[in-house]
Amino acid sequence: MQLFWGILAMVLSVVFFCLLLLNERNPKSTFWKSDLLVGGISVPLIAGAGLVGGLFVIHYMITINGANFLWKEPLMAAVVVVLGALVLKSMKIKKRLARYRILVDAARATIHPIEKSGIMPEPTVAGPRAA
Image: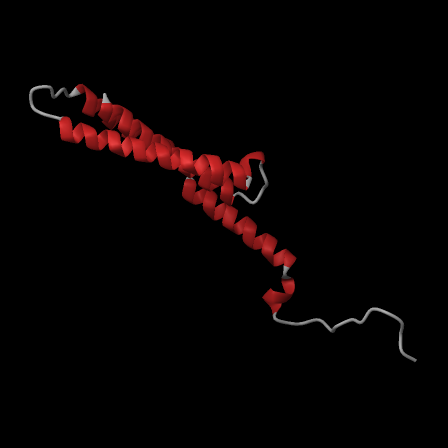
């Protein structure tokens, strides 16, 4: 069962990484977008799950032999990989990232229109007028 759990941990870490990527690129602010939750909790958990999953797979590959080999575990692991790929496909990551990029570019164009046009306005001086 080490192969199954290892592949499951790696697939879940990739799925949660993609969810985190979409959340961080989303220009709308959300609750769990803080540096503490992302950098202090989410990223170490994702990296740890991927690392532990990889170690499970490596251990399975080292300890496998012909006497105790069953097709059930590799087939279950293949099903997990296929389901993970279907989940990633249904998330439409490329389309969402492109849409978020358009929103960010539009927001930058409205905030800094001078940089886009290249025309500098006349400077204004605050204070009393000279006679």
